[in-house]
Image 1 (tube, rainbow, N blue to C red):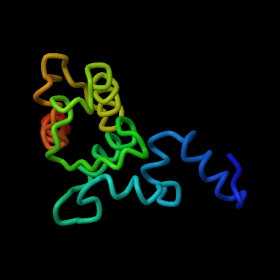
Image 2 (cartoon, rainbow, N blue to C red):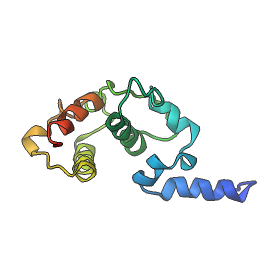
Image 3 (tube, one colour):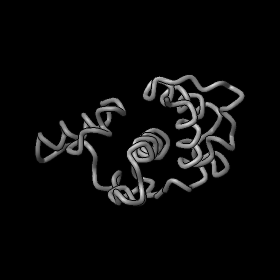
Length: 128
């Protein structure tokens, strides 16, 4: 693939190789389609910071960049197949590291992880 502008090539490479943390916090690395896929992303009154962080993580990790699929905090993740059992383990690990908590396996149910809203409720129950 040849890019007319070397800056675009670097940006494209960077967006494929940077970690989730830097992509989510660095607006210049997020492309327009990524931002549009997280429904209500910029509506401060309808989404708090934890919801944004978790929604951004789900979009970045589990949706194809060019799928055009939009999700919200109420989109079914497990029951729709966006997140499978292996992905749920990585999501749980992300949450535990990000929020410095430990989620017991018996609390990490498909129901608890089925929507971002449910996940936020679960995480908040462990955050002091």
